[in-house]
Length: 251
Image 1: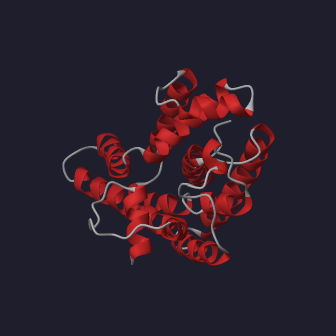
Image 2: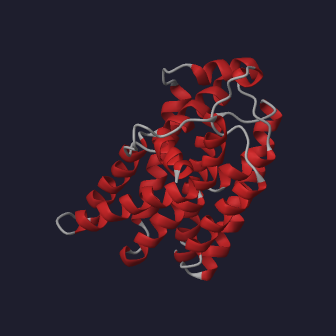
Image 3: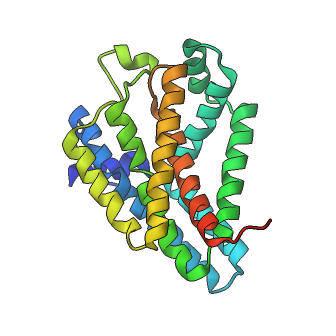
């Protein structure tokens, strides 16, 4: 329970007990519940969408749903994606990339990247039929948070403070945590159409392989911002796969 609450505390703005114990082991174990936290976030998004549809048209209801998911996470992953775009877009060396990502200011690459990913996410979701949209929202938030756990398990941590004794959350995980996260992530997507489920697994596999190859070439590993960027890319990839499989060719 402490591990779960630690994950909720770190990845969302949901209040947790003030006497929650702190340790490096708890922080690293918390990654196993990353997909479960995604289920909470996706559930909030689906709930807000359902309530908003009672009084608003779909475009506005969907926008409110996306805003709710951003609010409950404190834009945690969106901020990571923007920093990733700034760092990897503007930095020519590993040191410069890490330096840019530490800067709290939002640059041109980050602004364009963030606007683009939110626009694609919104437009893709708008193309999914309403009855199916609720399950897609929850499943995408869950599965997209499993992929970063795989990256942590397979990739070295390269933040500048990685050489210090105090290391932040997400710099290592165990086989047990990986299996737990995988089980949490796999189960929900099989409530979707089986073709969509297969497409999601294939798409996210392609994303992580290409993404890992890119960051290894540029910096030799990952940082916290990189994990946020990967989550956002996988979430968008899931929506795009479902829309593509549902949408007839236009040519």
